Length: 207
Image (cartoon, rainbow, N blue to C red):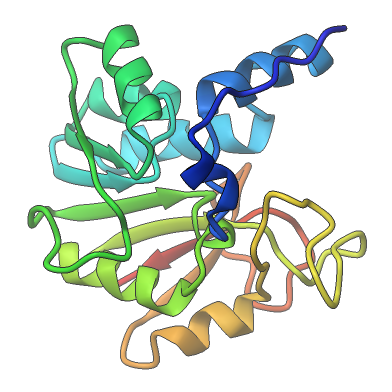
């Protein structure tokens, strides 16, 4: 099937953080694999929509807002993304929702909330520790998902996915926030699995 080529400004082509036009990425995924969201991502958002019901939530790296919408049905959500094209597309899909262009690496944070969310974001930024610090600055509770470098098929020296700057083991993620309680969860069942898990992606519940 045909694959769409993004027409991005030269800045985004050069940017080390591998910024992605998620409208293009989502269409390509559907054309190639006949899915809009991979099952793990959909499961994560389904669980979060229940966990975060009736809370104020800020999401970083919302893409085109498909998962964000699932949370927003039950919570007071502001969804952010660094790429204006993603936010414009998301706002067109879900005009009733609140979207904002924002870089997770910037301070101060755009708002305080009951919970912060970043799904499949850490692997796209140059400084994952700084991104994690932004999350905990935003809210007393956070949920983060990221590929697990412990997985048998993961690249050990560098990610096999060329869109990823870096991937991390659960132990490496936990070490980024030594003063926080970090629980490692399975992405499909949302049960605790511990840092030794080899499943991917995994979810980190931070308090």
